[in-house]
Length: 291
Image 1 (cartoon, rainbow, N blue to C red):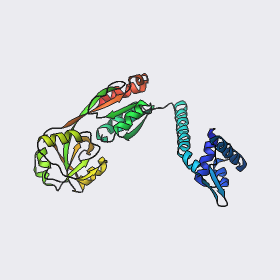
Image 2 (cartoon, rainbow, N blue to C red; image 1 turned 90 degrees about the vertical axis):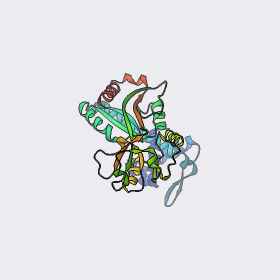
Image 3 (cartoon, rainbow, N blue to C red; image 1 turned 135 degrees about the vertical axis):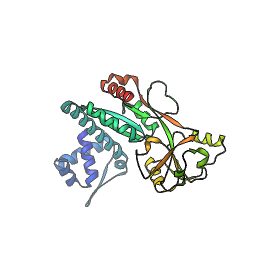
Image 4 (cartoon, rainbow, N blue to C red; image 1 turned 60 degrees about the horizontal axis):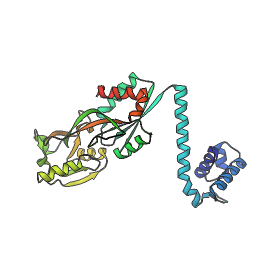
């Protein structure tokens, strides 16, 4: 299987007609037809059903299309990175950020970092911690910024970046505006907005059980943005990491949870062998000092 065969196959998938696919791929129609035939012979069956109106994928074609498209896109990405490195002399660093970590604390740092090191590109991927660690293990990421409930062992190394307290967020019209401090027991009389991705959910359940507090979750979401917007709309209150909220925002108010005080620690997680990349060493050193 050769890359031009995959390219012609995808052109035919996208355009549904041999003539248009050949025009799109900048190749003659006989050459495209021959390449598709060779690909079909190699894969052991027809990939397209031909008729007067054009062509459609067979069951075999539908089966292989996602993988062939993935191979093609990854090849393009690899070539683009190679060109960028050799011609533009830029070095991309891939950083995974856990979904519940807000941009407020990290964004200014990354802005300063790129001013100081303009030759280094940063690519940010926001995902769940589980998925990010899998990608770190497979080498698709250089660094993960996360809030693990317990420190990870080998083969990972963790550097503490900062500590973040949890706050109770509420709308400007909410009665909590009249309070100078808010305790956990104060929340049980309010509609509670449950953050499904919160790494502190089990700890919160345990705290509530110990204090015989029942939080009624009127809404649940795995999106931090949706939770904040529901708070803004006055649908309830939420327990949120402080840097999830925009600084000086006047449409969402908050108080630090006073009893009990809850916080989490944010770490940079990486595999020690990756420190051979000098640019990664620079980033980790800058993170640990700059935050």
